[in-house]
Image (cartoon, rainbow, N blue to C red):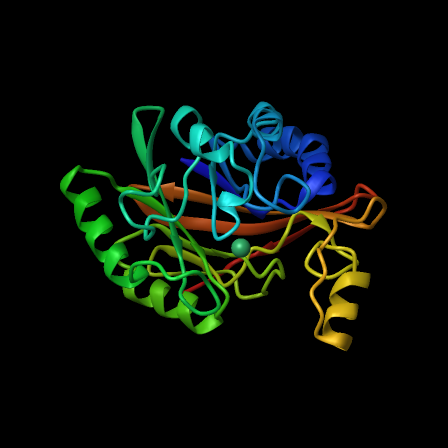
Amino acid sequence: MRVGFIGDVVGRPGREMIKRFLPRIKEAEGLDFVVANYENASHGFGLTQKNAKELLGAGIDAMTGGNHTWDKKEIAGLLESMPLLRPANYPDEVPGRGVGIYEIAGEKLAVVNLMGHYGMPMTDNPFRKARAIVEGLKAEGVQTTLVDFHAEATSEKRALFLMLKSDVSAVLGTHTHVGTDDLQIVEGCCYVTDVGLTGCRDNVIGMDAKVPIERFMTGLPGRFDVPKKCKKILQIVVMEFIEGRCVAAKKVRCYESGEIVVTQAWVE
Ligand code: FE2
């Protein structure tokens, strides 16, 4: 089974890069399934129904969320009607679910969405929640499990990966929007601390740099905005899984110029 994972899709520039590059990446890489994180997809904050349809129509099969899942009110209904997840460590009474199980050519793929604690809303312990979810998936006979850990701190992401590496197939970090260069496969589990954003690459986390600079200079609040013009990037991790273990992984970066840069995972 070959699966692609795209990190935080930020606004229209991110959606445009997906529409332009994803179909050809899917074909070239023979991808059976593609997951992306939607939480910044609609002008940087949350996801609208229109943009959800746009992304699912562009070749994305399922999407994960995070702390910005709730920024658009319509998300509650979309979580019920579309293949969208929200972090599993929100309390049970919160709309939606944090685990999706998808059939791919007779095999099951579980996608688990979790959110870290550092700098994030107060939720249930993601480490304890992960343990319980993994036990449940094993009991169901699911072999291949991909975790999107939406977290700020590199230490939290690394710790969750080391705790889960023999139980899941991949732990992929999202939320910081800055891709890290530590893509690796350890004992059959793929890991990267952050996949990095898909959207504007020349500002501040995909947002117009003016507002964050002003905020840091003055301490006053200001609303982030997605730039109308920028230099763009699409970043996707491509993985191959056999019997629940990751046997190959690479990071593919597409630039708006058409240039494509591929980096192989290190394996141990
Ligand atoms: Fe986030």
